[in-house]
Image 1: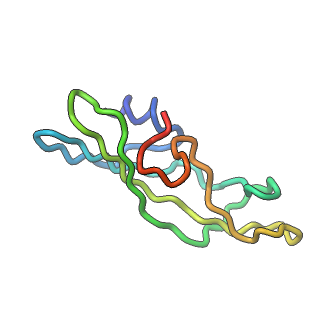
Image 2 (image 1 turned 45 degrees about the vertical axis):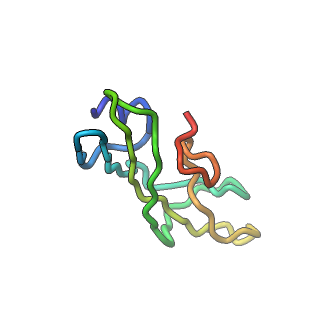
Amino acid sequence: MKEYIATRFNNFILDSVNETEDSYEFFISNTTYTATCTCCGVESKYIHQEFEKSLYDLSYNDKSVKVTFKQRRFKCKNPYCSQGYFIEYLSFLDGKRPFSSY
């Protein structure tokens, strides 16, 4: 299962798994401490807020897969940035859809 997470969710590690008869729920956490501002491109390490999100991924071993993780909002340290705060970009998310983009 660790290989599944490593190949599908870059920079995340597997914290725990809840397995039932017909599904898996993976709890993953981010291994990076910084994010790049989506407006000005300056890297920031100042986390303003964390919020839990869940998404559904492709089935694994004929079981449905739900992935739960924390997404973070950072404060941009560029005084000239018009955005101020930004949400980190995660390659496996595609807008507001509850499914992975792979």
